[in-house]
Each structure stands twice: as structure tokens, then as C-alpha cells.
Length: 106
Length: 118
Image (spheres, one colour):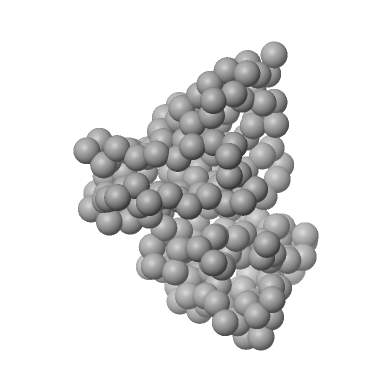
């Protein structure tokens, strides 16, 4: 079955750029999206179709997808961005989530 | 405003059956896939399956196939997730999720916590 691999954790200083990766076989041939989840809350979509931002998501969130890797980039990271982030793709009519990355803003 | 409102928390014993629900409003309910996502305590998101309410076409993750049933009543704008015999390992938060094109989830329910304990 299809798998998406994320690093368990990423740390970033406030104001710096955070990059969270998501790896899967030929992921670049599929659409990737990203969700943010804060403790005790439902996930929120932050990037869809590789690089599109839903209404209300700050411009500092961006995405890319090529080859075997999709990347979520948070520019000028703020304390409020500390959360778990999950990538997701769709393969053979099945949705797959990555294992999640805990972003710590130090 | 699009809303997915889930039924309340449940505490059950192993072997018992359970059916939880997710009611959609603010959009054409029958025209979007609705899925279920499990999150075990302290763990990540796991996609369980989806249903298209208009014709009840249903797809399951191989990891959950045969373990549960997803159904829909489009007249009530409601999707269900049910178990015939719960296990302690079913203890988790369950989210319903509206899927748009390319199966991206654009709206999530508030979650239903299920605790299975003897």
C-alpha cells in the first residue's frame, strides 16, 4: 500500500523559515495537501493541490511537490504556527496521510 | 456556512456495538464525498473510508476493510460509522471529513471521542 513519510519533528526559531517534507513514491505525479492540527482541535487545511492556499490561510504558508517529495514551507514562522502538520495524497481511490510532523517554534 | 456536526462522546464495553453520526449542513450534502478519520490517543491521522451520499458508493482503507461500516442517509444529510463488536483498540477520536476534488478534506467535524473499556 502507498506510504507517505514525514520527519517526526522539526524545530525553527521565530521569524525563520520552516520546511516540512513528505516523501512518497512518485508523489510529484499526485496532488499533495497539508493540514495543521493544534492540540485539542480538528485539523485545518493549509495547502491543497500542491501549492494552493485556502481562503483565510496566511501567505507565509506555501507548498511545492516534485519527484518523490512534497514540501510545506512556512516563512517568517510565528509562535502560533506551532502544531502538528500532516501531508495527504490520494492513490488508487484511497486517501493516505503521512505520519505527521510536530513543528516546534523555539 | 458549511458545517459537519458529529454525535457526542461514547463510552462502551468491549464487544458492544456502536453507531456514530455526522450531519452536514450549509451545502448540497449529496454531492460531496464524506469520510471518516481515526486519531488514536497521541497518534496521527488515519483515513478509514469514504461514502458518496447520493448513491452510497463506499470505499474503505485496506486497514479498516471488514472492521466497520460506513453508511449514509441523504434524506437526513447524515453519514454514519458503525461497529458490530468494539475492541479496546477502537478507543480514539473519530472525525468526519468532507472531501472535495482530488480527495482533499476541506471541512472537518468537531470529532467524536470513543472510549472502549471494561
